[in-house]
Length: 142
Image 1 (cartoon, rainbow, N blue to C red):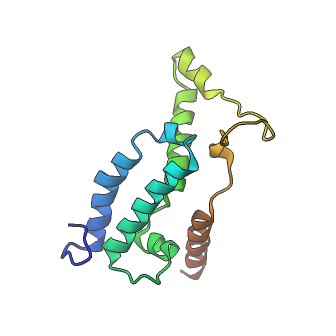
Image 2 (cartoon, one colour):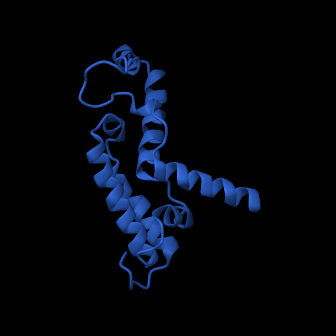
């Protein structure tokens, strides 16, 4: 149904992706906020393959253009936003243990850890920045 030669419209392919595939990929996104970058990159590759197959795009079309045309945020941005929403909701929860879990302070940047633990405050990656700049340009021309 989501293949290159499918007769399903792009809008319906996008809806199927958002309702079925992305929900499975981002099921525990607050936990993934602190996952290794390689794990997040694998999910990003899956999303890029979907975008390319859904639009039947040629290999030379940039992924940022595909994301803009399908109106899909990158998986990094989506997970970061979902994590922020989750932590905002948890911060006002009546359970004191849940509220205490939200008050996580990442270690100092020079601390010797394997990977950064402050993903929610990191600047956006290159593709997310490119998609946002393209969206800004399109908004100013409309």
